[in-house]
Structure formats: structure tokens, C-alpha cells
Image: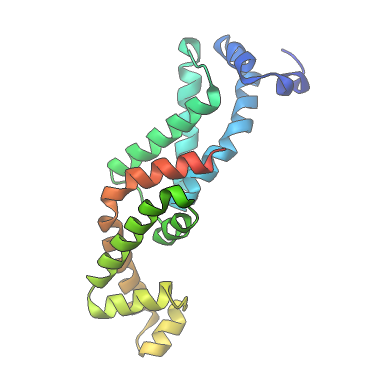
Length: 196
């Protein structure tokens, strides 16, 4: 086994070669290099620490398990595609709990070439918000557009904080359902933009 400093200077291709030979230090270097980027990309969409950690861990466990059969030209590209596929699979199995506000914020950051997607997401969100029951819509709007806390909303509307929380849960559940058709496109774009 070589000193860690030497490993860190080697390109991914050399580390992959060592990985195929069951070198745990090469695996550790690759994990330390790429796991934060992959975690960050998933976290920007899910805002769920445990889910993101699990997805990254599963990806690297799979990498280690298949190490002897790896035929990877670009490790960075392979990992980008792998985490994107894991996120998409997670969404398809409907285990994911998405952060709607994170999607809105990230959609606003897209460049001009993705303005159409941003417009579509905004339109779908607005259409779905419009279909919420009146009290639910009012609470959601005060929270997301006027940035009021649950306590401030409860005071303004003369209702309990628990009622505000329940209505927000209903609104977010409904809005997540309304975005289901757009999620694969959103995830694909976010993964490409966030893992650099």
C-alpha cells in the first residue's frame, strides 16, 4: 500500500485500476473526492439528509461490489449518471419527499436555455395552487409568497398553529403529486447542473 499523498495525486483512471485490484485506499480516495458532490446534488432536490446519504452510500457500495468488473472511461461521468439514475428510481418508487420550495428556487436559477422548463414548472405550480381549497391556498400563499411563519399565519387568520401545519402538509402533498410528470426532467437538469 502506498502513502495517501501519492494516491491523491493520481488520476481517476489509475485509482480505478487499483480499485479493480481490491485496493481499499484507492476506494477511500475516490469516495472522499466524489461523495460530497453527489450528496450536494441529491440534497438540493430532496432536502432530506438521510435519503441523500443513503443514495450516495448505495452508489459507492455498488461501485465496490462491481469493482472487479468495472469498465469505466470517465469515473466522474459514470458517477453523475449513476446518481441521476438512483434519484430517478427513488422518485419512480414514490419514496421521495421533495422540497417544493427548493424546486422553485432551483428553477429560478436556470439559464436562458432552460427558461421553458422554468416557465412550465411555474405554470404547473400556479395551476395546482389555484386548485387547493380556499383556506389551504390562503395559508400556502402566505407561507410561500409572503414568507410568513406558521405562527404569523395563525395570528393573522385567527387559527391555531396546528391548523396551519396541517393545511401546509395537505398543500405540499397535493403539489408534489402535481409535479410528478416533471420530476424526471427536473432531476436530470439538476444533476447535470449541480455535479461539476
